[in-house]
Length: 202
Image 1 (cartoon, rainbow, N blue to C red):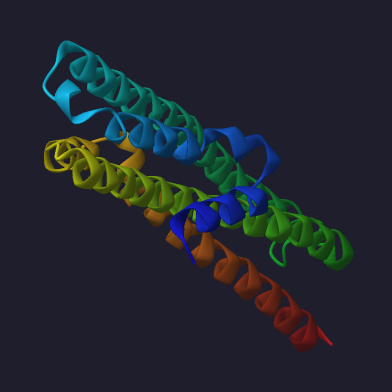
Image 2: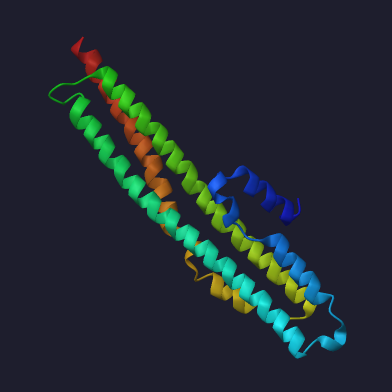
């Protein structure tokens, strides 16, 4: 599958609020085609220089867009992750087996809601990792296309810059994904312990 189609498919499958945050691949591709179709005598001219500067400006705008969105999501994930940990502890303290007024029904209901919220958060964080990956791939492809069609040398320097950008560095999100998986396991363990304790009392 061509990259343009793969990107379009990913955009369609993502969360509605995220759809305008992806790489404007089609527009950049059109600009590359326009620059590369300029008459040969314009290469090296001020007009050609302006076109290349516009292309670089658009790429930088795209990177700013990725970074702003990525950092906003990252911050939101940290807050939601912390809130989920607090909710789990509150449910254990309020309705768990060792609570002063344990309630199997209330415990199960609340833990079920929390589990659903953890799964949703986990899914969104995985989507953000994919977002980072596909936008990086798109930038690399459009730069390769630009260099190939124009004889330019933008790709290497630009990719070096991209590797330092916030949207490319997914370590924190990957760590949160793992912590969410551990959290789901912990919730299940608590439910198993609760059932076991109830069985022992009978």
